[in-house]
Image (cartoon, rainbow, N blue to C red; front, side, top):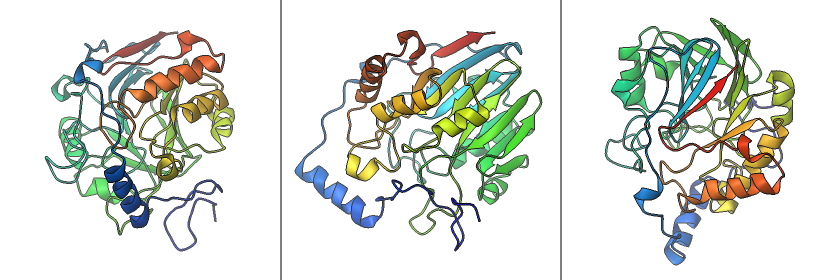
Length: 324
């Protein structure tokens, strides 16, 4: 049995530092701590500009890579002449109930109606800020031929929502889609959309490569020891999309969310590709101010002696372009 497969069924993190404290007792302690010590205020909404995207319609040339940040962990990637989405969510709340739960602080960087035709969707795991059932239904209705790549255990979720083209992968497995090869990569996290459905499906990141470029999407993850192995097997990467937010309080979030300094170390372990920070500034999930993660990430990047032109922080809607 693989180390991340639980003997009793479901999945687990195989590393010693991966003990998950996100159980009911930890959640209650966190909420009580917040009552005694309220978190610092967030900046004004003007601190999060929304810019005009510059992706290609309907598709970019095969030799062009564009990456547009929609928000949180949602990106439109144009690569090898195809259009990919990561962890798509276009609703206003990351929640099972419309109008309830963490509210989107910045509008999506691409309006849903402005999306190009979607060929491929990469899903990292099933949490509500990454997997939104309404968005799944909207995308499938507009792109019935799109292929969804998901970690083990999620096919039934998509079948119930009318999705037909689904491929489940385990860590380290690969598949092809036209000119692209996609690899499923390890991550340190957990899954479950209800308190009683913990870890029945897997969590992961994704590597995507064409003849010209290689992109890494880390998914949602705490720091773990195999970023270097990922680079060795699927790299060298031109660009890495790495989460930097939702990290405070550390005693509670460390196993499942990297802080900015850990994210920069992950980028170094990956071979220091161009670093696009994600998982910040869109939904208020934890205690740090919404604008703190990129400030700390930039400082850690510079302190590491890495070239500033490889730190590619995007505004919501901004498009990163890389020519061959």
